[in-house]
Image: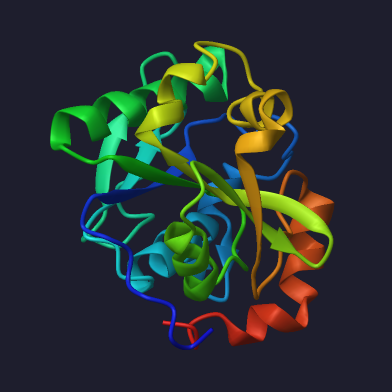
Length: 205
């Protein structure tokens, strides 16, 4: 895995960070909650940057994310964020098309243990759709070549999951290091804070 190539210059890394996080009943938005002294969102963005993409784009919505991510990250606002994750994907597709990218690698803002190597491995797959596999769980990051952008749903909260289910012949699962653990609730956040991998955050970059 150490020899995994840097993502091509035509590939854009995207982190979906537009949702309200309504299941998280903490004192602030979950993406602002501190994990190892940094906002939760910081880790997803930092690991994507460390993977070597020429650009990492964060799609914001319910809250502004300036200050929650490194300065090197690009930010675009999704005005229709309340209409579901699919709207953020369409924002990403539009941005990539205008910027000359032919591939997206999509990750989630609330998955702090997706390693830079996982981003690189998914990016390096030749499959039109590639999805990371942590142990037995297939989960973002997901690689989407421009050939399949037109198949993505226009609305709803299914995002790329709908496409993966409907066109399995296009999908390759890529075994990756790290963990698919995400944060939806305060209880899950507390579990993540106690996770041994939290102590390793910062050492992967």
